[in-house]
Length: 425
Ligand code: AMP
Ligand code: GLY
Image (cartoon, rainbow, N blue to C red):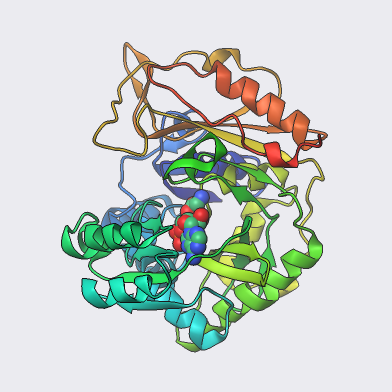
């Protein structure tokens, strides 16, 4: 079978890496891919949002499966168009994908389905939004309604901050159309958990739990990013927590989407907070997490393509239980200087050290590009994820860190505290 992975991040590199290991697969393509996917699959110069060309490529190659990586492909309607043309797609259609692309849609769905989440309201005018936040002393999270690549949430600890966040979105339009509607919700406290469920629209099979580190700098300081690292399984997340999130968050969401006529086929990602009052849902994503995919997929021993195909076809009820390695996995993102500030960020620098990786380090590329005559150069904010499995979290972390240290380019930085919380002593 021929498989197309849509996207160009480290998440897609990890998906491609998994697909090429499948016995079911004869050839893997990646659209548009990056400097890493080009080494193990064929990169095809089609943007994830170019739905027309994705469909004609699928026809030309008679693809057996298309896997949608990024939310942009979902929002562009790639899932609908490919399914309408008769292809098997691991990824939802646009309407089901609104669970990610509109925070107000997601919050309304959670309310209808009784999914535990923070108290909230939705606003298009600054004055009532500010009043709602002020009534909670500014202890709120202000969220741009639309897609903002992980950067559209401002967590506030006072009225000055909540006023500024609301102004930035509703008055200064700093998030463009995405911020023309905002969700303001109560601020919650507690460790976070990313639980990804593979679903065919009815059944849900949870993947191994992971924790993502969203702030740019050590100690959870600095701005929110798309994710600076992750590990699996996270501290204090046992089977019972996973079961609870599946039954109170993922299954009700999948049912509610199906009841609305929009069955979700693909990966539904629940971002939850484990508060002292119980599980609370922060967000849904309609796709794999990045960097969660980079630490979850290496632990999966079941053939991923068989799983994705069963979800695409609606056959998960008879799918055998997933097999996982017990070995923990840690992933550390090496980013371009100034990331996530795209304006201050420079790219195009040569990347050195990738050929001398310590044993056991997997490198998943994101913002890399092969430039004839210069080799690999940086091409985005998150450049690579250095990933390692280990007998213990401590060992996986040390190996991943030794990999991250080895990746050298001008302005490179990475967090040194990913998964440290889970290292004894
Ligand atoms: P989201 O995109 O909604 O997951 O938000 C991004 C990040 O902002 C989350 O991973 C949390 O770290 C933080 N966040 C979101 N909502 C809240 C909330 N209600 N209280 C505290 N932190 C939040
Ligand atoms: N790591 C968070 C995300 O993929 O949205």
